[in-house]
Length: 229
Picture (tube, rainbow, N blue to C red):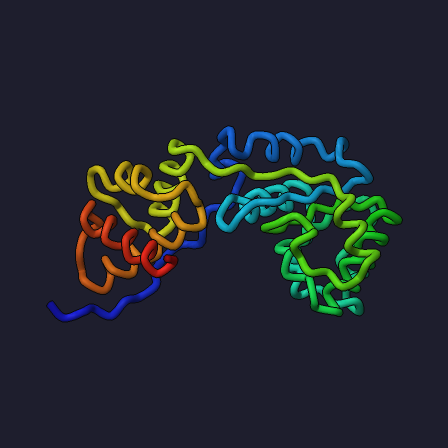
C-alpha cells in the first residue's frame, strides 16, 4: 500500500485547569500551586520528568494569576526587568536548561532578586533538582538549591491511561477497543514516553491510512521502546 502524505491537523493541546487530570501523583503539587501564600518568600520550584504535567500546571497557573511565562533558555539580562510586574507573578520554565548559559544564569539570578524586591510570585519548573543543572554561578546555585521544591511523582496506571486518552483527543484520534488499556498495561509509567508513543501512533496511522488498532499501537510502542533501548 502506498504511503500517504501526512498533514499535521492537530489542535493545540488543551491546557486549562479543567483539562488537567488530578491524581495522587500530582496532588501535592496542585494543592501547593493553589496556596501561593504558603510559598517561602513567594517562590516555588516544580520538579518532574518530561511529560509529567509541569507545562500544563504552569500554563493554567499563569493564566489564573496573570503571570508571564518564559523558558529559561530564552532569558537575557537586558530584558529581564520587563518580565517582572510589582505584586504580579512570573513563570520560568525548563530551568534545568539554564546551566552553562551565561546570559540565562545571570538573568535568572537577577529575576530571583527582582521578584523579591517587587513582591512578585516566582514559579520555576525543571526536570531535576538544581544540583543537576550544571550552574556556573555559585550564588544562583545556592539560591536555587534553597528554593522550596515540590515534585510530580510517577503516575499510577489509572493516570497513565487518562493521559493517553487526553493525548489521543489532542490529536483528534479515536483509538479502537482495548488500545488505551493495552498501552497502559504494557508500557513503563512514564508520561513523556506516553507522549512519544501517541506521536508515533499518529504518524503511523496517517502514513499508512489505518485505524488506531491494538496491534498498530503495540507495534508503535515496541518501536519507541526499542529506539530508547
